[in-house]
Image (cartoon, rainbow, N blue to C red; front, top):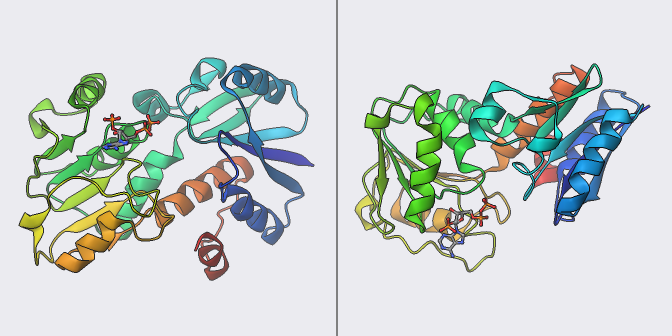
Length: 271
Ligand code: ATR
């Protein structure tokens, strides 16, 4: 019997145990998946416990530790290294390897829904943003990649770190409040998690634009103000539900080698 965990703080809201335990049962795998709330000082101990444990085979890492866990791991995939972000730990021959299935899941949603945008606006420059940029970079974007963040300096530093992997000519860092025309507009900030949160950006130039997609990484609430307002303007919208499910599916596959299905039951669990 093996066990898996999702570590983070807070962790109560996490839907990952429901998803993974559903799949473990469905595919007849005798394992458990549990939440574990950790303080930052517990990360090293958790990694050590996992390394030495006969039973802990893998873990998910969630906010705020996707970057903080890195020093305690034995290796990183190229994507985790590039994005400085680990959401999945796989134990291989006693070594803890950090993977980033957020980035690959975002890329998969872009492909799945043919969101092959030719210009993209990313809002935010937090921990998840490099994963989103990674997914977009894989599209071989023809147009511009715009980034805007309340704290512009954070966006500048983030792009600087990623520049070797990006074509610097295709990126433009905008002042907070500047809203260009783009085909795909992605909210990577935490604004929207509370129902009344609203991004202080003016999207008036998108009125009646049916050829653009407003994408919010948040999936709870299902429709943030960012998405509700986009719908009212006549834009297309998508929330972060499919990306969340795909990152879980990819983690599950890394641990168990089973290709889990995103079926109606799972879609209901996340609803
Ligand atoms: P992290 O993801 O690194 O934990 P965070 O504090 O959760 O960071 O913030 C994620 C993103 O939400 C950041 O882009 C942050 O903007 P700043 O870099 O300016 O802090 C953005 N964000 C959070 N609250 C915001 C607010 N009230 N207005 C605008 N942006 C906000």
